[in-house]
Length: 301
Image 1 (cartoon, rainbow, N blue to C red):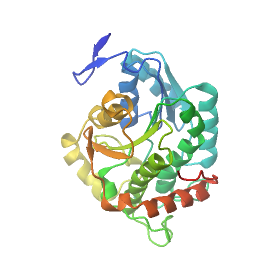
Image 2 (cartoon, helix red, strand yellow):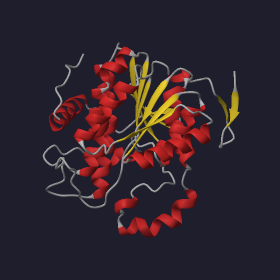
Image 3 (cartoon, rainbow, N blue to C red):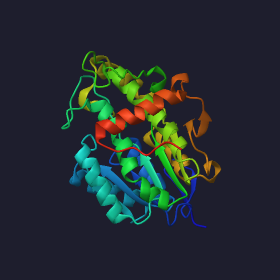
Image 4 (cartoon, one colour):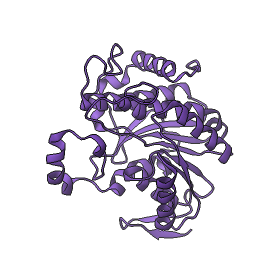
């Protein structure tokens, strides 16, 4: 067994994930990059996604150096676009005959309403529809690779989330915070519904809250108050490595082997919001999401 002292001073078994292949979306910076570094240090072959080739390749090189693991691949795709998600899925399937872990990490916050190339509200499209579509497009490969883990990063902000099916695109009324909260609730409900649908298939689905982390998250379009507060609260926030710890734990630890349909914070199971357990709403969200991305759905078990 080969051991390594990582940047946080913890001892890591560099063979824990040997022979495993992992895909981390949004892996060029922040929590996603820290997750990729952590899993690469454990011996996994890691693929990351980024919006453009140069940035993804640069991040992959940095992850290789930080993890002392040369098996890091870069994929370029704008995951707010259905076409780009589909192209990414094809490339991943061509590259990886086996996929042991999918970490749906990509996400963002926009204070003002923006539309994607598909005419969808950007926050909902990137934070929820992208992982929903990508997971479904990779599902046959994931099932064939079982036992497999799907980890979809949410946030404690989901507790304030509400899904308004009459205005999912924020056309009637838009608030950046409300849109973000709703997308994070959708992440939790997607995870629970995925776990129900894949019961017995050897694929587990879990959803972590990373905590409030010191990143450039939301920097593209911040609310004015956050711009003012950010320098004041930044010293008290988690590091990216600390924020990635629960995702890495769920992707790799033997302690959560077979655990599915659960929400985690600080690497411990935790109850999510009451509304997140509504199976009727989760089923409706699944169907509406499938319609929005042009996906035919599998019947629930």
